[in-house]
Amino acid sequence: MPSVDPGRSLLAIGQLSERSGTSVSALRFYEKHGLISAERTAGNQRRYRRDVLRRIAFIRTSQRVGISLADIRAALDSLPDARTPTRADWMGISAGWRAELDARIADLQHLRTELDGCIGCGCLSLTTCALNNPGDRLGDEGAGPVRWEAEANQALDASAG
Amino acid sequence: MPSVDPGRSLLAIGQLSERSGTSVSALRFYEKHGLISAERTAGNQRRYRRDVLRRIAFIRTSQRVGISLADIRAALDSLPDARTPTRADWMGISAGWRAELDARIADLQHLRTELDGCIGCGCLSLTTCALNNPGDRLGDEGAGPVRWEAEANQALDASAG
DNA sequence: TTAGGACCTCGACTACGGTTGAGGTCAAGG
DNA sequence: CCTTGACCTCAACCGTAGTCGAGGTCCTAA
Image 1 (cartoon, rainbow over the protein chains, first blue to last red):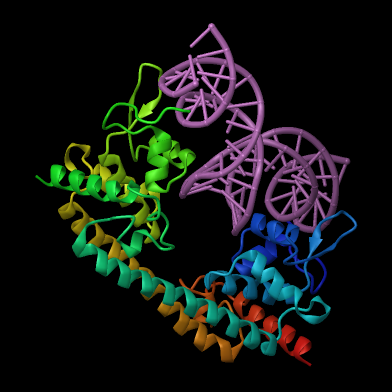
Image 2: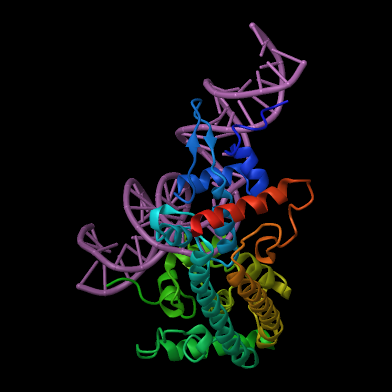
């Protein structure tokens, strides 16, 4: 049989992988990007302290909310002594995650409203349709946009016939 | 001065780029991936029929809703004769886009509910926290999860002191 | 005829979140 | 001692949606 218990409280990477439900390659990836860390044995193998489990729970929960690893890392780095998030830390940080989630939901709802306005008209115009022209690009250079309109409607009529 | 009008109704790629607000490189990219097409001059330059303008409007509008190019292409390919979407086509397809949008919003709202439940508890447990354990992974192999729980709480208590 | 802007292809590069494979080492049971 | 599974590093690759540059060609006005 292979090795089972390296020391009493340190975890080998395979054990951490199994307990956290995270692939070994992802764990190495997280370490490379400064999200977790490990001690090393004399033979250069990683040994994780148990609080890394909680750190990974934090990472994966945040990821599910849609937070990038860079932002997760920034949140972790903001904690004193590079500590693993405590309950109080989590409450503070997750309030921020919630605000991001709210913003994304609001964005999508706004988009839905625009789409609803666009479904019936079918113009798909870059100059008149809000959905297609967020920053009011185009629309300031003489006949260009007008011709676009005319062309789009021509195409529409032609293919709809 | 450079060339201005290749034929009466065909557009050079630079003209299409300007009129559609899409970069030349993106237009070539769309062609490579089968979203648009062009005729060629004797000198191998692209010449676009005007209905490509509408096709691009369709692509960009769909993208804004968050649809991938692959899905946009599938929608275009589903039309008879590889035609550019008509008003009726757009109404049908955009209803589908709206359903996707609704699903994404619902997903995020569900996530928000889970997050709210998780903010106060702070457990971040893979076994008990819904947010962290969507498919109820883990939780079926003897002492593992129990130890995880104990460990997580230990880490929590230790760092929270 | 020539200048030069617009166009062509092809390959490399960006960010993100990893996975996969090659080639080599560690560690523990038998 | 030896086998074998777990581990190590490094580099290349996946998909998405393009951008950028090199090196070369087209085409039109002057």
